[in-house]
Image (cartoon, rainbow, N blue to C red; front, side, top):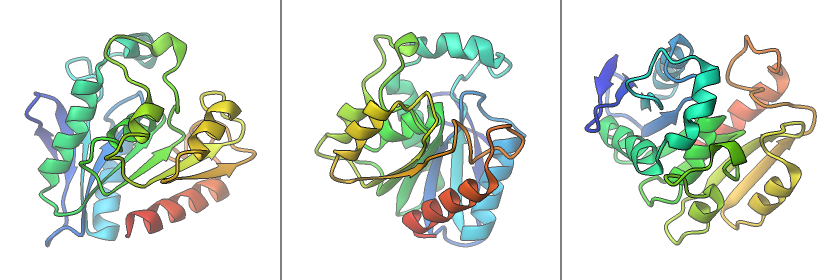
Length: 218
C-alpha cells in the first residue's frame, strides 16, 4: 500500500501478518516506484516475513520520464533521499533494519550504509562514485560514507561489464574492510532486478538474490 513519509515522499509499504523479522528500506532504480517495485516489496515481505518500505526518489515528479530523471539527479540531495530511506526503515516498525538498492538506488544504499541506522546494506550495481553528470552540492561520495565510523556491513553485487561501475571504482570499494564485493564477469548494468530488461541474466540474477537474502538473514 502507498504511505507518506514525514518529508511528504510517497512510499510503498508491504508488511507481514506478524512481527516483521526485518525492516527493509528499498531504494528503487531511477525509474522510481512502479508495479515492478510494488510487486518486489510484496514478494520480499510474503516470502521472508519482512516489512519492506520503498520511497519514490523523485517525489512530486512521479510522471517524469527516465531521460529527464537522468538529467535531474544532480538536483537531488542526500539529506532528503537518504533521509527518506531512514524514514522508510522507521516506518517498518522493525527492531532490525537493512537497506537495499538498485542502480541509482544502489548508490543511495551505499550512502545510507554510513548513517549508522542500518544493520546491513545490499547494493545491486550501485554507483560507487557519483557520476560526473550527477554531481551537485547535495551529493556526497558513497565511498566517503562507507569509510565513516558508523558504516554497517555491505554486500555489493557488480556486473563485470557495467560502465556505471568502472574497474577502478570497484577496486576502491574492495579496499573497504566491511564491504564484500561479488563480481559477475559477463553481466552488464541492471542484470538482476527486472526480468524484462535485455541485460537480465537469469542465472546471475538468481545467484545475486540468493547471496543478498542470505546476507540480510532471510
